[in-house]
Image (tube, one colour):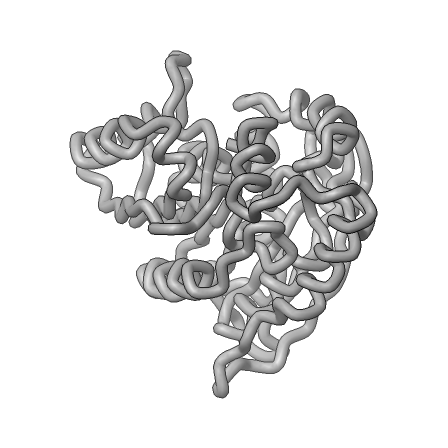
Amino acid sequence: MCDELTAADNDRNLGTALSRRTFGAGTAAAAVMALLPNAANAMPVKGRDVMIDTPDGKCDAYFVAPARGKHAAVLVWPDIMGLRPAFRQMADRLAGAGYAVLTVNPFYRSVKSPIIAEGESFDQQPVRDRIMPYRAALTPAATASDAKAFVAWIDTQRETDKKRGIGSTGYCMGGPMVVRTAAAVPERVRAGGSFHGGGLVTKDSDSPHLLAPQLKGHYLFAVAENDDARAPADKDTLRAAFAAAGVPAEIEVYAGAQHGWCPPDSRVYNEAQAEKAWGRLLALLKTL
């Protein structure tokens, strides 16, 4: 889960607490260097910025798909730093693998994307103070409502193959949103991948793991090593819930991967484990 404890973990893992200026320069350099590789047979893609009507307003988002044909669609929930260049790059890569990809600004009720400037990170206290009020608006009910609107929009696009199921992926806070999306639109969502997802198992009566009986298809939960260390029983609770519901789920702790390891602009980006997660995501989406 992204919080001040995660920031402290990152400082310890990197061996230093960087100044704002040094951290900003380091992050910018890492973002330039961490260019995601495309497969040799990647499809040409076309992307566009879009606005999606929801019951709570207009959501700004990025939609990208192969330049030709109809394809299974994927709804992407970004991490707590929102829709930004790194997630556009990730969307382009996924589209190149043959999917119509919608990446949304989950904070549209409060602010347009991008919500962070170059060099900023959720690890920084002023940034956390700014973002957390945006996060508070994303209640379970709001997420389910958004999911229905986003899936309905996806199904109106000429690039979407409606004969195939829709997948959803989520990072950090987006992990539980994947589960809530699948529960809100089970007739369309048939695969979900959570990467360093936080809050998948809670004590609340509407905890995401309790939604397992409502889900269809296959699911992937890639767990950060430090998240698992903080809540080691969560993966077992999640595994038991999906097993009891008869819903296939791959649940794995990624050794050496810290919370936030997948986006290429992350302070703790782990290329080897991010590529492993990418491979498992592609295998999951083949089930659509």
